[in-house]
Amino acid sequence: MIDLSLAGLIGAIVGTAVAALAYGRLVTIVERVYRPRGPAATAAEQTSFDQERSMLRRGVLALDILVFAGAGYWLGARLWG
Image (cartoon, rainbow, N blue to C red; front, side, top):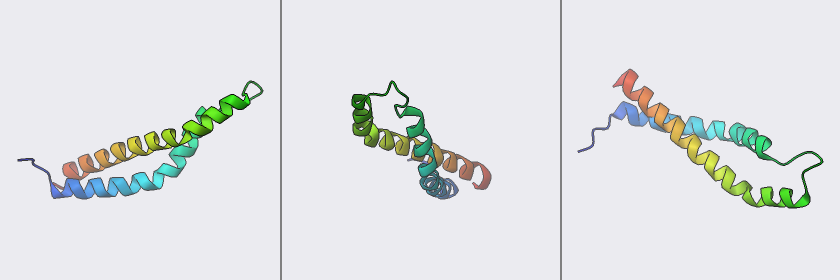
């Protein structure tokens, strides 16, 4: 049987809430880094980025939730149980 602590699960829930709050800032930073810019950015590059933007956002959300929920579970289990 899987041994899950209640404190760890509560920490994971809190970590997921923190991930939801941090998502907006993280996706803005990641989009700013990967957005084509400058005179070398052609219309085709901009169109390609616009098409791939939803996949980029999904990836950021998935990693955001995994990291924060995992850290929340770990902290909850370590500190309270």
